[in-house]
Length: 180
Image: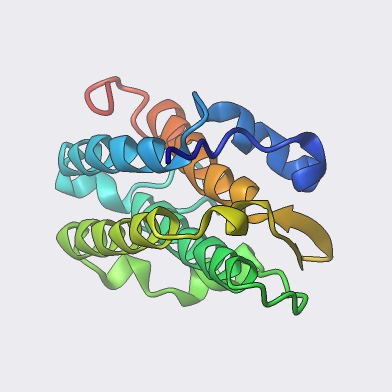
């Protein structure tokens, strides 16, 4: 039997996630996560080493911090999907990226270690979503005081990544030499 995940409806997430979800093409977030993983790793590998410590403006994140933020956010979203997918409807708190990023130690890391961690986290997310029972996709829990479905979370992860890759290209690598 074939199962189609389908796109989440507007009621499956808070409105501030709708732009992320809209970034994702098609109806299969797992396929998008797999494809994006390959493309993202290639893009990261093309960033020149000195560029990893670059901030496009004072007070903005470095490339290293941006990449580790993507990793941290995916971990948190996947944890939410795991809890709700397993029918644990305990409301989950939000997280504050402005606390996470400066305390992440990202700038002490090598680009290679960040790329490797990104790959591991993405592979784990793909395995989680790939093996969810069909009925889990429709489950809705509360995270950050808002309802969110497991289906929406998968799309949010994919769309959040696309959002930050666009920022990376437009604001950090605007010389056009990378992330074509």
